[in-house]
Length: 101
Image (cartoon, rainbow, N blue to C red; front, top):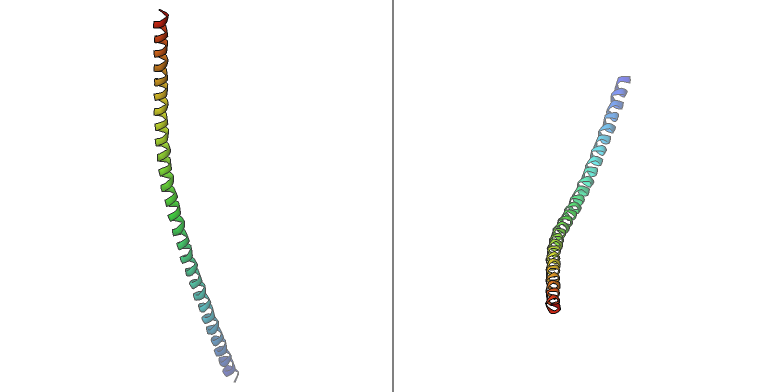
C-alpha cells in the first residue's frame, strides 16, 4: 500500500512538473514574441534614422560644394579688383607724371 501511495504521489508530482514546464514554455514564447515586436520597431526606427542621416550628409555635401564655389568666385573677384585698382592707380600716376612734365 505504501508503494501504491508513492506511485500516485509521483504521478501527481509529474503532472505538476509538466504543467509548470508548459507554463514556462508559454511564458518564453510570449517573451520572444514581445522581443520580436520590439526588434521590428527598432529596425524601423534605425531605417528612418539612417535615411535622415544620408539625406543630411547629401545636403551637407551640396552646401560644402556651394561654399567652395563661392569662395573661389570671391577670390577671383578680389584679385580682379586688386589688379584693376592697381592698373587704375598706375594709369593715374602716369597721367600725373605726364601732366607734371
